[in-house]
Length: 131
Ligand SMILES: [Zn+2]
Image (cartoon, rainbow, N blue to C red; front, side, top):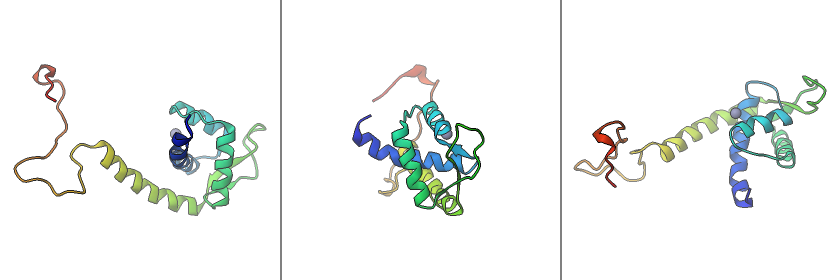
């Protein structure tokens, strides 16, 4: 992956890690497999420093006992991490609306005379496209 991609995706991966650490204990190998299922191939050399920084920032804490021998570093979210995650949920929801939902324009007021963009209906008009 290109360094530029990595820079911006690192934040997204951390949100993903916080989300899972809020619901269950997580460890490196499990997270690498989980993120791979979403199409994100992280190396241990990327993931472990990220986990260490998240711990240092007080968002994750290391558990004393691991669920099995190969899971040496098991993490759960901290109360501070939980507060951060709640704020991030709002940010992600807003970003999702902005990026993905047609007609969600927040910067300019709606134009008069019906300039509003509505989601295209599928399955009508025989698939005719106008662009
Ligand atoms: Zn996931």
